[in-house]
Length: 128
Image (tube, rainbow, N blue to C red):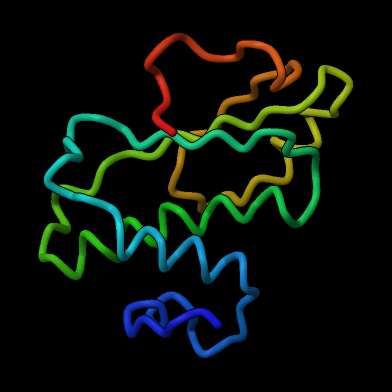
């Protein structure tokens, strides 16, 4: 069973949330080391094999949780920018993907076509 974190409730808005979303939010709230994050650097997220559908837009949970952690530490003015790389096979309809992105998203989006079994990003551009 996932232990309860009181900060997670701030992101739920009273609604139910699936286990994966809760795990992501709790992991960020408990493990993100803000002193190691520079406000001048963007936080980059890669959604590998994203396709198009409801799971694609779960990446918004990451900026939401990071922003909550910064706000709870009184660091509202230091919240970094977010950049999300959506990756899938070249046959994926990236036009549909980008047309379906939420207009009020708090991240910059980029498409990265190709197999995630091959190199997609420059060295040291993403941390795992």
